[in-house]
View 1: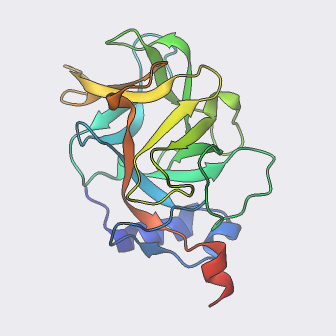
View 2: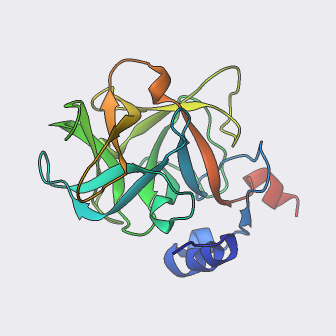
Amino acid sequence: MALGFFGLAILLCLTLDSDYTSSTVYAASSEGVEITYGSVIKLMHEKTKFRLHSHDVPYGSGSGQQSVTGFPNVNDANSYWIVRPETATSYKPGDNIKSGTIIRLQHMKTRRWLHSHLHASPISNNLEVSCFGDDGNSDTGDYWRLEIEGSGKTWRQDQRIRLRHVDTSGYLHSHDKKYNRIAGGQQEVCGVREKRADNVWLAAEGIYLPTSESKSSM
C-alpha cells in the first residue's frame, strides 16, 4: 500500500524519538531541498530508477540477514530510510550533512540499519548489503561515507551522491540483475570497491526536517 506524505508525517510522530518529533517536518516538493539528520527519504538508483528497498525477508545465503534490494515502484513504504549520524556524535536532527561525513541509514519500517560486510552478494558475488541490528544495536558495519558528486558541499535533493562503506570500502551499488523468486522483479543491491556509473544515487521522495538554521529563525 502506498504511504502518502501526510501519512508518513503522522507515522514519524509515532515512531521517532522525542528529539525528532519536536521539529516540524515537511514533504519535499521540489529539487534542491536540503537533506538533514532526521529526514526520511527514498534513495533512487540513478541508472535504473529503482529505489533502495528492504523488507523482513532474510537472504537465503551469505549472512542470512534481512535482504536489501532495488524496488521498481515508487509507492512502497518499505523504501523509506531515516538519515542518522554515526554513534557517539553531537549531531542533532535538522543539522545539515556535508560531503565526507559518515552517516547511517535506518530502515523505517523494520528499524534495522543499512549494513555491509565481506559476505558475497547472492547474484553477482560482490559485497553483500543487508539490514541488521535495531534501535539499540548498531556498529561500524552500518557506517557509510557520503560522497557528493560535483562542487556541492552540503547534501541536497538534486545532488548525485555515492555512499562508500567504511569497513569494506565498497560503494553502494545496483544493476539490472534481478531476483526470480522471493523478491521477483527486484534487482540486486550490493557493494563494489570500484567507482562506477552504477554507484550513483539521488534522494527522491521523502519527509525532510528543516535545517537547524531555519528552525532558529522561525
